[in-house]
Image (cartoon, rainbow, N blue to C red; front, side):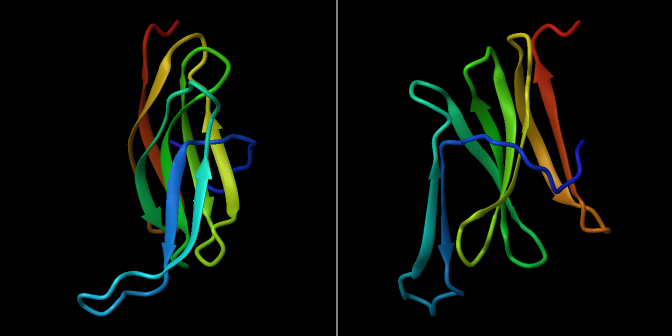
Length: 123
């Protein structure tokens, strides 16, 4: 598990859209921003979980393949108003192994807890 906030330079193929408030029944949502990140051509990237923090900022987690062997775990926090990246954390799988996100939750102290699995031969 890891604790937020973190910083690193990474990209994830993921589209996130900010929606202004809850629209009335039957009304279309109003999109305020969108964000698209790509880990690189011909690389596999997937967002598989999303949470909001106490301030309504989006926390997105999933997997991302970089130029090294293996699929890494990637977590990003985006500003609710602008969609700007507030922080990013990549956990490399290393040695041709793959990482898989299990789940993420906020604990009682407001820390982000993330669990996952390292797939492949370790050691």
